[in-house]
Image: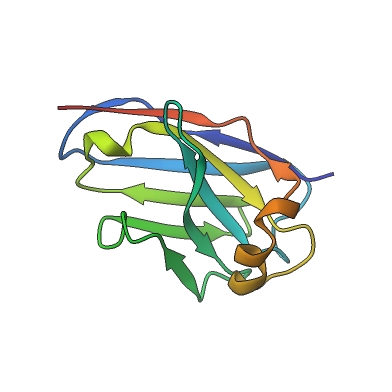
Amino acid sequence: QLQLVESGGRLVQAGGSLRLSCVASEGSITPFAMGWFRQGPEKDRDLVATINWDGENVAYADSVKGRFTISRDNVKKTMYLQMNNLKPEDTAIYLCAAHPWSGKIQRFQEDVARLRSWGQGTQVTVSS
């Protein structure tokens, strides 16, 4: 059973940087496309970034392009989100998820409603 755990969130000032980690405490992430989501106060859960199974293809939401970088290390069973030039509007709970069977970004994006392997989330707060 694939179990994911997010970490790295904390309070930072606007313009600062953070690196979030998503570790598979059980199971393997190697075959699966993965992604980072975020959910702000009283907001829907939005897809922030997606990465295919071997890390060679990535995709970003327009709101984070040029500031965030998604990556993965399948040997360490970890996915990362490097966040630079943080803004107050980036404040949210950040969660990671894996596709149940596909390694492709397109399928991950199409099957968001079907995702079952979620972490508990890590809180990122950006002050003005």
